[in-house]
Length: 278
Image: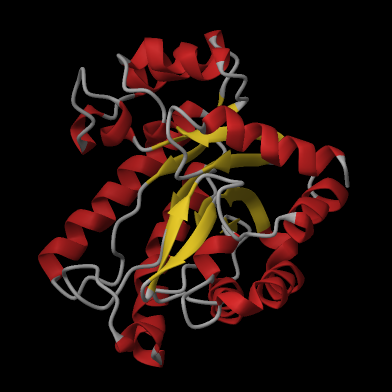
């Protein structure tokens, strides 16, 4: 695997210095959320020109860091038509930009049927799923036109909350340009984390062929929530997902999430040791 990191979890530095630091830390790839990583210049839709893409691409290439994911984590089930139009335009701007950047995927989670992007029981209903599929279709069609892969990330609190619902989205849209970001911890909740091994095995079984990249983090129960944290600090068992990577996904991009600058080397070492000992 090519192990990397979510870039906005790294030490806050000017953009070029930050990417150089990521290389010096031994990471091979990064998850890039433009507005969270770049502060020196705007990253609005109109700013995303071919020239800016080539500048960013060259910075990453100089430092031997791949752009594994261009993050666009906005709510495609927003019921406000004006907001949804802005969100759709933002996705399309990111897809165009990704085609010039040559990055792995444009990544997104799967929203909630409200303007505040908050978890409600309706998230897991059929109507919310159909709304999400309807609103995702033109995004995927545009990705096909631009030669880019859009990858959705199932999250228990969002509309695509489990492997079965993710499989339905893939099958209903039926496009090779729609794939999966597998984040095992995001499939867990305070209500089901004790079954983590069965849930991860189901995800691999149901979604494995369509997994384009992997996110890794850890968790601990805290009250009625699972608190995310860097790998090796909590209760996550990684053997199944690392075995899946090793046996079926050569050189796949894998990014660490919810690390801090003071523990990202510890998290990296933890995952690499587990991986090498399989």
